Image (cartoon, rainbow, N blue to C red; front, side, top):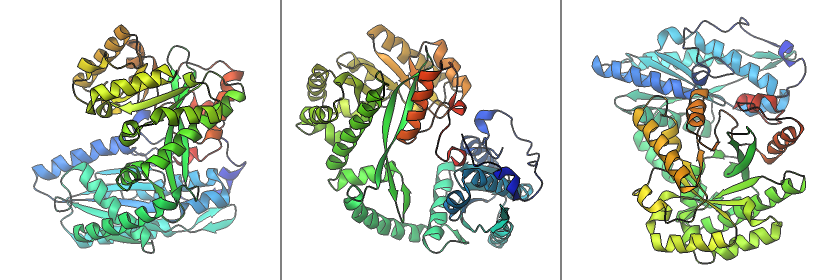
Length: 478
């Protein structure tokens, strides 16, 4: 990661050393930039807070804090200054930790504070105002004052959410409403207003999605897949992103189902396939000629006649050899109409394209039908990988899938690898490949190019080596 020179010496704030947070020191559960608990640890802490509140019949509040227009800090002063502002913000927020049962950085420019025994709405309002005041004190960057405002969303247990997921989603919804309507304020979650807002947002997204391709708002990021024997990147998965100039980054979980519903998934899927093949062909021409490109197929795309023609056109146009394209379909898609799925898969396999079953383990009768599918690899769903070191059932399922795949001669890729313990487990049972944030997040094509170039210049180590690659994107703010 390369930052602007001498930026660290140009920002002044509170004491340089972060406060003693008395937290577990396991890196997998702490945010590397701020030292605060990360999203994974925070969910566990919040779950404990809820259990305590339920046991004592108390209320609880979740406060989510988003820095407003933080992108301008990165754009104006550089990502190193942005990182230091985030660190300074975390120190300021740590002053409120005595009033909370959990404090965390959820990612990006977003923090969270869980407040126990919060029966008094006025007290939470006062706390939100104190947080605003603390973070509104200017940061001195390169001799200039930079002002940050915050948008704060609040949800209450149990009236506005009874589970961790509900409380986080509802507090974030309230925060997003503030960001959409002027910022620099706080808001309690309102279910009735939320329903109305959802209808309005859906209409906005539907209208905007019709123009997203033409306006080049849709982009592809790529997540490396690491071979556990060599430690080298053997493939990448193409992941679709929507960057809207006003609405910001829109989650694929939100816009892809909408695209399917309104009939836009076909042109979008076609664009993704062509763009991914063209990018991999470009990497091959640069000398990285042993790299696979994995592309996800939607249910509608897989079932629509002419998929083989579409794949052939994308390969022909890009000049990419079929064996360097891997098409991924979910287990539920394959099992929807097994006979038709097998026929389509055979056609694609005869073209020379590689085939993979994604999210393996989340469908039905997986082991019964897997041997009938002409596939090359399976991807174990991240929901199992997340629990392999803590949940005996997840560990047993993962071991069974790897053993079964080995017997069938099918390659296994584990998704969602986030820490060293998971990696050691998977390596010990001879999993073939892994992908996840322990190695790399999804990233723009130019960053993949840096990694490939470094991989050619030096032998890749067999453990996490992302910190050795000079990425040219805001990795520090991820």
